[in-house]
View 1 (tube, rainbow over the protein chains, first blue to last red):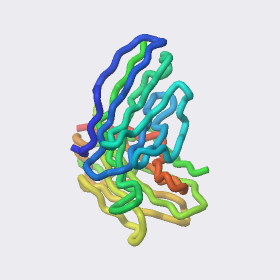
View 2: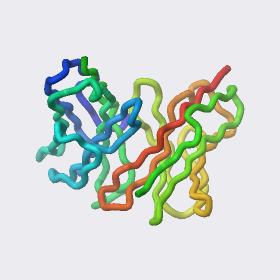
View 3: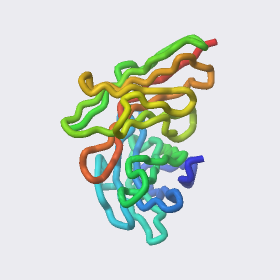
View 4: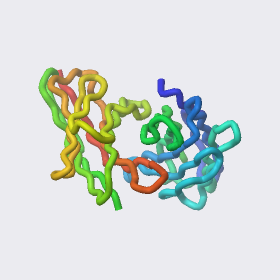
Length: 116
Length: 114
């Protein structure tokens, strides 16, 4: 158990809909990363938050957004869903560079999104 | 831009045989390298990491990797595999910007046969 939790585990929804994926980082970790794993794109970095603020953006679509709340949990919002958004979405957390091992990221179990 | 190449998409091997999963990276700056394992229907688990120091890194479950700067490689090895090692293995590098985000290779599926 990495200490990172993600809910829900599975999500099935229709095209055009909007969903929210939730992530709770390990206790004490300030940084949260979101990654997408799909068959055609592999594992890709989407976005990073550090202590409530966006720090880095990767290949994240404009239809997707995220935020990190004061209690450090994070949510990834996916809207106007398309079939191609079906993927496994991972959240990872780390200390973020202020202490400990900033380079070690601990991954949650993922949320499998299926868009029909 | 940094990138990671995993040369083999699938590696079949018999139980108790040795295995090597290959990983090459491209970077013009200092690198921090990782191997993660993903068991079926599970998340990613850190196997081992290279940050600095000894180029031979030992990880969990009997795996080890060797950092070779001249060949820009970070191959993963295990002297004797078990059926339970069947999984997807990902090599990754930390980005050189301040985000510390991971850049992953395409993965290698290790298939251990009895």
